[in-house]
Image 1: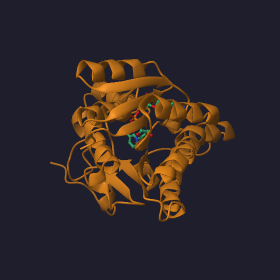
Image 2: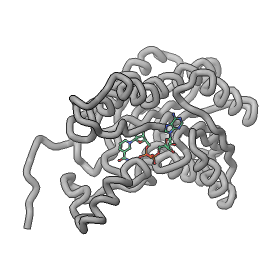
Image 3: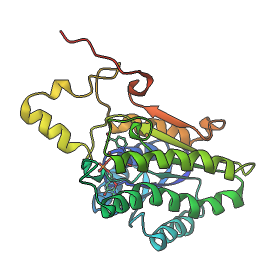
Image 4: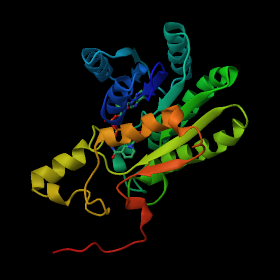
Length: 259
Ligand SMILES: NC(=O)c1ccc[n+]([C@@H]2O[C@H](COP(=O)([O-])OP(=O)(O)OC[C@H]3O[C@@H](n4cnc5c(N)ncnc54)[C@H](O)[C@@H]3O)[C@@H](O)[C@H]2O)c1
């Protein structure tokens, strides 16, 4: 599905970014794995062990100079770039409204929203120049509805959806597509505290029960959606925010049946 595609994936050191990197490489992509954490080296080792091609880059997606550098590195290393998945994100710590500080807001927005903007800003000129390219961004169901994160996190993800919709029109007629994925609850590094707490309480079977799929998701399930959107198979999908959430965001408020 991604044969010969050269793809940059941020947040590739863990969770959704790692799973997508491994999957994209298995679909034939050359992957540039970017993360602020060392975990990115393990992702590349795993890809190479499977016979794939990847490069690890340590960078902070909220640092504009670093973003310019990793995109240029990808272009010089692989001779170009066909897609970027702006996925790196932070949870914001789930503080309540009155506990949140301006500094908390700035930290959350810097990674989740400005980081996405910078990835788009500095990859778009290259994509426009060659007349094609696919941009995918990780938003969240928290960007669509309440109750999936703190106010700062949710606003940062609503911002990602807005950036995607607005950018699709900024890229009018260029041949470049941009889409967002809105994951529901996925078991990753970010949600580990929630899973650890539930397991410690013996209530693991309660996690993910409020969506009609009646379970939480795995990072690979987001990765499959990301690989599709990065591929030419999604050639007419543009400006879209795709929930991958077991159906969670399809509902009005309801009380799920308890036995
Ligand atoms: N896990 C979920 O339930 C869920 C739901 C909706 C959306 N998301 C979103 O999915 C994306 C991936 O998160 P995940 O769940 O895989 O979590 P994760 O913590 O497992 O992975 C996030 C990765 O992003 C990296 N990162 C954080 N800040 C960075 C920075 N400034 N520069 C570069 N890398 C940075 C981290 O080091 C980490 O490797 C995030 O944008 C998150 O908000 C997750």
